[in-house]
Amino acid sequence: GAGVSQTPSNKVTEKGKYVELRCDPISGHTALYWYRQSLGQGPEFLIYFQGTGAADDSGLPNDRFFAVRPEGSVSTLKIQRTERGDSAVYLCASSLMQNTEAFFGQGTRLTVV
Amino acid sequence: AQTVTQSQPEMSVQEAETVTLSCTYDTSESDYYLFWYKQPPSRQMILVIRQEAYKQQNATENRFSVNFQKAAKSFSLKISDSQLGDAAMYFCAYRGRTSGTYKYIFGTGTRLKVLA
Image (tube, rainbow over all chains, first blue to last red; front, top):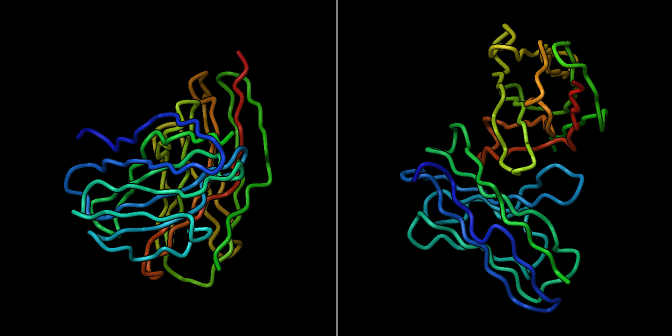
């Protein structure tokens, strides 16, 4: 694709529900990142994939958060038992290789009510 | 651990004037990248300019330039001839070259307002 695509653009869910956020990276990009941006803050690192494997998941806040990238392309960020504190913009970025410029998507705004 | 600090939550500049946004960082690595990203209301992070730490020359991209002071761990962004379209959040970011993951570490951002 022309750029990193994230769906949905906005998601409202009830506390306790399960949500999935999708990221379609630029075609051919092997590295993929997830970030979380809370209101008034800069993006915070969650997880990084190199190919299909999670090379670094040190930013995931707890075991309610999980991400997959089964075929080395599309990635899904999964959040179980959502809490109001999970409300944020979730940004995805991809890069051709791990040491090249990352391109960001427009993010998914998650609101937990 | 690496940190990035932006001490100016908000800045204003008159159209056509020059403004400088400040950023300091902390790292024990000797080789790394520094970036300035622009985030308009559309939320997409747009790369404005990048600096490689091993290069002494300050990066320049049209109206945007940086003042990189490696010893002081300072990385400021200068915007010349400010335009209304420059209004946005600006984030300073650090990325290591030896960390193994090349993850970006962002500051808290500076909101730039451009006054007509």
